[in-house]
Image 1 (cartoon, rainbow, N blue to C red):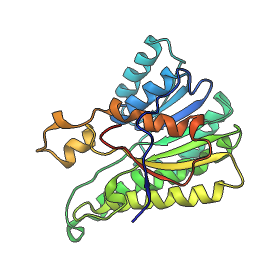
Image 2: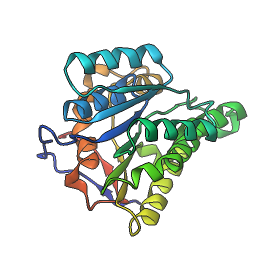
Image 3: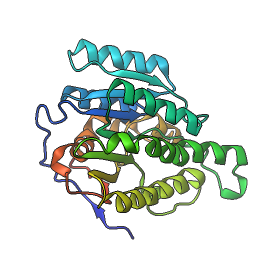
Length: 256
């Protein structure tokens, strides 16, 4: 079993924890991505908002600007159909506009269907793998040179308990998340001695998101944590207080 870490529940982010940092959040239009992008902006970061939901991105953009936080950037992209060339184009835009990247949060995910592997359709398998595993790999690879420019930078993968221990019927989603955990560890090991980039993963637990509603349609959503309730650990891993932490798997407890 993996050695799961827990961030001190008493930790709180300083007011301008992420001042002057550029942070890219995938799946930013709603759920945890929306809450995290808002929190990063509130703490001084220039956020790059990536999602296929353009209307959701525009709403988030307006919220951040209305709150007088640093002006964000919108980058519409459907990870399901994105190619390596698309990620390279994104990196070139980031280079031109900002010249660096201080944080990268892989939050976007596709659930697929919870069925036995014997009944999982090939097309759905490929779609889930493309969104949950191939996209984080290709996006990270495209952005590594930008992340090497600051003295320190952070990559954070939003993961799931079913990626740390296999569970029946979670099929492509669980396997893709297991791949993400290994991707995180490989990147952390490769980047630890040569760069200031740290790489970690975090399982936020049961949160009131659209993906959770699809996976558990009958549960009482009123008993779940809100996306805003699980943001502090992500901020910790993005900020300077976690400068020496890399290659670790974190979970958020009910007290955080």
